[in-house]
Length: 278
Image 1 (tube, rainbow, N blue to C red):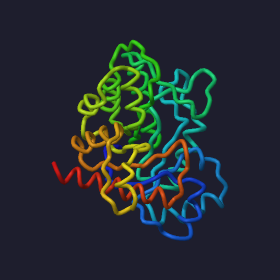
Image 2 (cartoon, rainbow, N blue to C red):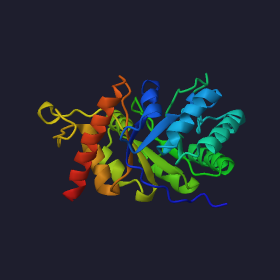
Image 3 (cartoon, rainbow, N blue to C red):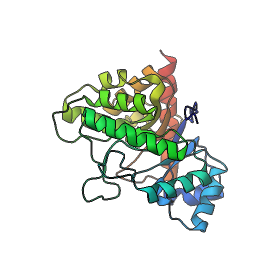
Image 4 (cartoon, rainbow, N blue to C red):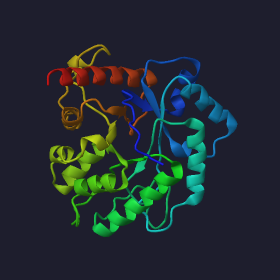
């Protein structure tokens, strides 16, 4: 069975939060696609899954997990994988993603710890990704996690991520905020990192908070001037890969849906203008 399927560019989307459910069930806000946190739906009742069915009839859905722990030393959680496959079969997402990490000895859900980047870890992770992809019958995307302290690594992070993707035929989700944090903590260039990632492997971007200049951010239709390190990395991604499916991610606060849709319009416009100048 071949897992190598060309996945679409979905455009710009956001994460489906509880605060937004009513709007997406009762109307059809202008948006390209939605990302759900997988764990929120693994054991959901039929009412909640029915709401998701209604939403996915109008928007492509992407599933993003926090519990796969692909780098953990203990065996894969087969019960979790069974629940995951059941949800995948129902939702039929455009793709599935999780994190290139492990969860730690206390096995806390959502604890996303960076791996030691070594040849032994590489072999271990690739083997586990192959098991997961074979079980699901799909490629998976893996997201870079932040490395908070400067550590000595056998393999540079970008080489490790590139090798994982190539050897397992998996795909990459670049979290720009995590990349910026790791580059500052580890002392490497985020731009060099982007330029070492194979173009055919990057399927999705998580784009965190961006600071717009006040004078250019007054309306959703404005063409904002953006001077922000996150945006500088994102434009490098655009220069290297062209249009990549992008989710606007806001972690610290939950803006109104109206505010999020406005941000998406401004970022889409700025991205298109940037690509138009190349």
